[in-house]
Image (tube, rainbow, N blue to C red):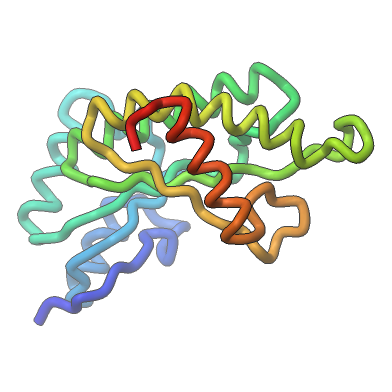
Length: 182
C-alpha cells in the first residue's frame, strides 16, 4: 500500500539519495522531497548523462512523485560575497534543470539570512536585496522549464529574511513584479 504522504530523503542523509528513495519506496511512500545537499546528493552529479535518466526511471518504477530541495548548508543567496551568491545561483539553476528533467514541478530554496556586517539598521533590506536579485535571475529559468520555486520559511532563525508570512509575501510580490510572470 502506497502512503499518500511526502517524506524528505534527508531522513537518510548519511546515505546516497538512491538508497534513500529505495528505503522510502519499501516503506510505501509515494511522494518524496529530494534533498540535494552533499554527500547525500549532488546536483551536478545527478545532472550527468545517465544519472538523471536513471533517477527518473527509478521514480517511474517506484511510482513516486518528487519535489527538489536545493542545497542549503553552504550556499547563501544573501551572502555579501558575490562569489558565494554566484555559486548559489549556479547550483540553484542546476536544481531547476534537474527538477524539469525528472518531472518534479517544485524546487525549494532557502532565501537566506541577513548579514550582521551590513550597515547598522539596514541588515534586513540589504540582505533582502541580494536575495531578490538572485531570485529575479532564477525566476525566468524556472518559468521556462515549468518549475515552481518555493521559498522555505525559517521562523525559528532569528536572522532569516523569511521569518513571517508577510516577509515571504513581500519577496514573492517583488520577484513577480520584476518577472511579470506570476
